Length: 128
Image (cartoon, rainbow, N blue to C red; front, side, top):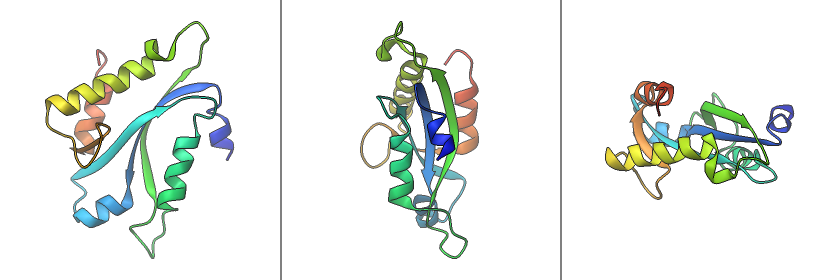
């Protein structure tokens, strides 16, 4: 709960995967990754929703829980509109990359199938 409070008045981009998706695929090479923004008055509420939906990781039930792979955090500023924020631009570039490279799975444009190592290289790319 303290970690969630530390995200108040912040903007952030998260990259998360559910253990259920990995367990069903029987492969950890490629993961179904969900990414999105924490925004609004309670930005951490979206991350809390994932915990509510998937539960906590449990060694007896390996399909339970989710993993947070990446969190890019910036201060929220009244001088910068959400649409002009680095977080928004970062998410938009990820969506464009996913569409261009046919990485989309299931529904929406924020759920992709990708090797985690490749995603980390993309996220670390400075001009992204």
